[in-house]
Image (cartoon, rainbow, N blue to C red; front, side, top):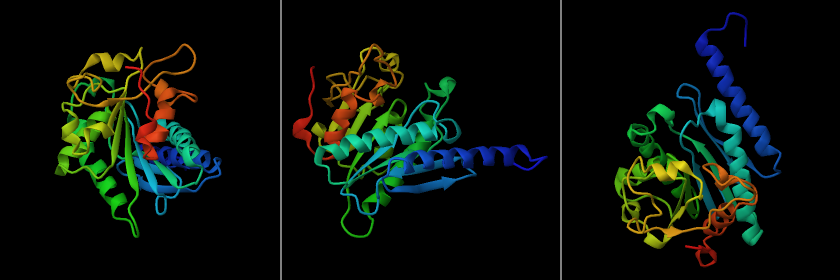
Length: 261
């Protein structure tokens, strides 16, 4: 930044550099990388691993609590890269793309018990999914992979028009969504929930019953992680059972989903 830059200019510079760093990480995978969203004023961005214009299967990664472009864009792209690698390994055809989407203002810890950020973010997610569905040519099969507060945002995306433009939803580390599977307007068996055994956010039920409650109606996925840590971020650890489950769901191989419950 130039000497004497204003606070707003410094923030814009930090935002742009964070996106640039994340793009470098994505490019290092050797896969096509696309900058889908770049909004300096609102500090929102989205980067895909894989070609959103041609991929047969697309996943949208919806983050939660404390996620900002400046602090988390690189981490989200790293997670998208892991999800992409797992999904591609199912068929090894390169016909998959994963969008690391920071398209809403996620809450901080003090705000996490309130639904307002999800209510704001839901329409933005719904718009993104609708946009992917009307690309030129044939639409992709789409899966939403939502983590933490992002699961609540996904619920409000479904509430936007009652017809969420996705084929499957994976909810991991959810604090509740004030809903049940029927509210997503897709087959109940294609709403999946993963719960790590030591994830305190799931126990909180800040926003209603946990999606792993039988009343909720979701199908379960294995969500264990390698090593001793099995907490709120372990779903995206390399080698985790959750990543393997996400991979087969994204490729539409619902018959390969495992659950020990």
